[in-house]
Image (cartoon, rainbow, N blue to C red; front, side):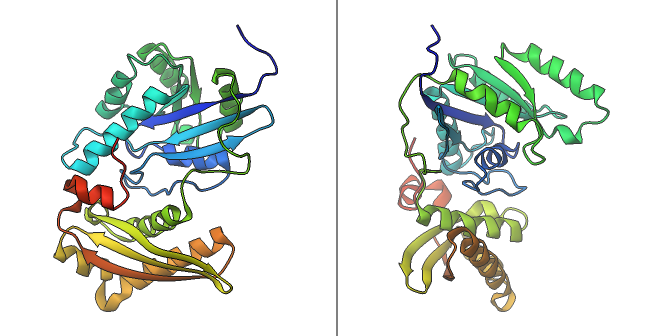
Length: 300
């Protein structure tokens, strides 16, 4: 029975294949960048909560790594498990695809939803790229036949198309509950974590080919002082050959990345930022569970 005027609170898991727009959607809904975004798959590696508080409900969006088929390394298998576990705890699920594209990986994610009891809203993202518009109606009809979705909603997370309509559906699917987080809290992640992610985002944007998948960032020091924030961070790579690529000729690439990250962090934190970066090698860290745990990756 629906309880009117009762406060509601719950978890909304956003799942889909890699690079479908999950982080962009959550950042758009929250009006804040809680998850880094790049055009490259596997940018999101962790379970990140984004808290959207209102007078009558609190929606806790769970940004998850994209579920992918070729989980050859321990890190990739941990990412898949992290995404799968988010489904178990969810009160509502957003299953995200692209409006003009359906892949085997989309089907893999949909198959994982078959035994889930939580309501599932299918999101057809990037509708701004669908032409003619009649093709969108066909895409919506096809998606409706794939699964017994609670709703099928066309959106553009980047262009803000239909986001308000989507958000208006959320509260009715959340359980009656008191808020789990303070109403001024937007994410469960620490400033250290977010600083490390900003550096990794700039590295991912600056580097080509496979290098971004072989690196991670660890903040060793984050100190606030009268003159601003001082941050020391290590960029870990898997092989010695990758170190030179990340540093760049004469240190040029590392300087470029450091400057971009510092300016981003300065804007986020609202104070001057002094950022020091070092590049170190930890052989095959992404395929070693002990190394992953030491570097801040969570065991599902």
